[in-house]
Length: 336
Image (cartoon, rainbow, N blue to C red; front, side, top):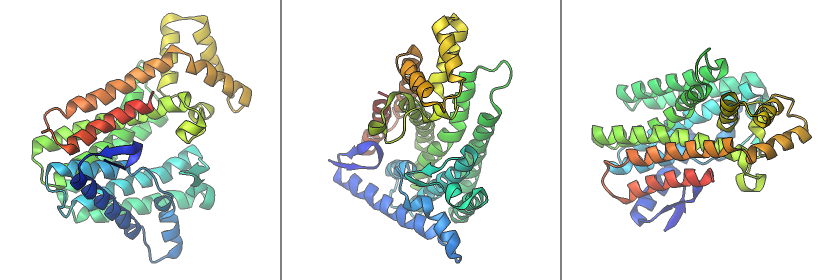
């Protein structure tokens, strides 16, 4: 039993392990090839985040989903390169929007080269992904275009905020479905589709990916509050400090509005204050970690992970299915 991919995923079958590892190695080579330019400066900027590493969560899902057809089919690896290029491109754009200084342990592209270069590099990666897609056929282009539309829509909805009368939690979950769930779903869809799996399997894996993607992001929300930096590898409370209302904060505000408890209202006021102050930030983290809203956010995470697991029920029992189930367990474990 060998550990591969994110979260220490254990693969029991040696043949499956070999397929997944070979696929991920080929994806890595494909990413470096796709980010080369005749202009050395562009190559350096485009490969900046590729070389910084990452979980390669989406390519892993492509490889596992391809096991339900022919995992050696010629479109499998290129489609995995497409989804990872798309993901990387969104990171360049996100860092500009968030004014981030660090990404994957290195200086963000915008911090190193400025916003204009970062945005244009993201566009370059989208262009390279589209070039690869063109060779995968019109159906692949359509699937990717629909997912990208959802991804951008999710980003716009997050920026605009919920409309008057819209439940903020429902709005937030819709945002995550677009921003994160859509591309994770396409990863599973491409793996199954390119491997020649039948339509029923493709649809099952797409539904699984959608729910797993949302659960993955919700687990990050919980970790941002609940973990220490040693455990998560990130500074806790980063979203809090930046004033980003993730699910634990939204659940707190929902409870404060419903019950009107003085301590909930006081915590909401603290969260709305200047949390760049270290003392206020530490107090907000301490109170949120002990608050029922954090446990509610954990339950929400578990619910989406369980929905992802349930979606797999129609698939035949095999080591690839067991690995996909294990990813559901890993997401829940991350959320505590």
